[in-house]
Length: 185
Image (cartoon, rainbow, N blue to C red; front, side):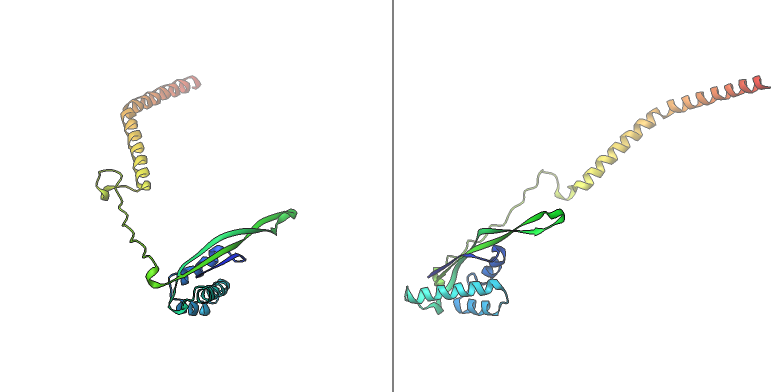
């Protein structure tokens, strides 16, 4: 009740889109869905599904109409190495992938149900309240503000000294101007 196709010239990503479409479906529904899908991958998977149906009815003497698509696996095969021309006679490499596709048919009771996924629990990094947690941008802004406030405090501490120096400098300049003006007169 299996069928396998190797080195078919379709990208695995594209074939996997079609595989997701029919995975777990009853065989008649899968055939109808593939027939209505307008993609190259649908034609390939449809042909492979017909082969699996023929294997089930001929080799295993099973009624394929009551079966479901148990598994459908798409793997990456070899790649063709091609190239696209680019400037100055160079070539940009391009890889065209092939696919290996395997279909397994089974009965509805044979399919093991996937275990339900556990909900992911997110633990906070610290014991602080989550609502007061800052974003990276806010944290960097807070750090900049700290630097600004600390540098402005330093300026405020040194401001009277600078004012005294400035007043002293200005008074000495005035004296120098008076002396120079007296000498010119």
